Image (cartoon, rainbow, N blue to C red; front, top):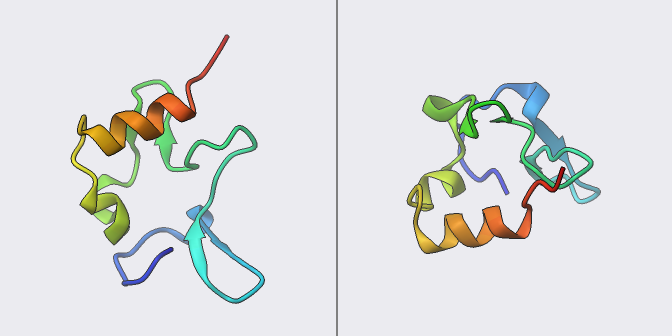
Length: 72
């Protein structure tokens, strides 16, 4: 959920049936703001609050990446 204004570009925001805003996800479940070539956030300076809570390379980050691993 996007719970604070950080300047996330509209193209990366989805609104659920209750009016809550979330980061858009691609069909495979990955965040739409993820640059697949570099595996870095393309909106890092404007990332939502929840993304700021995850330490890059920390347990939660690695757990989420593992759950969405790209299989060629």
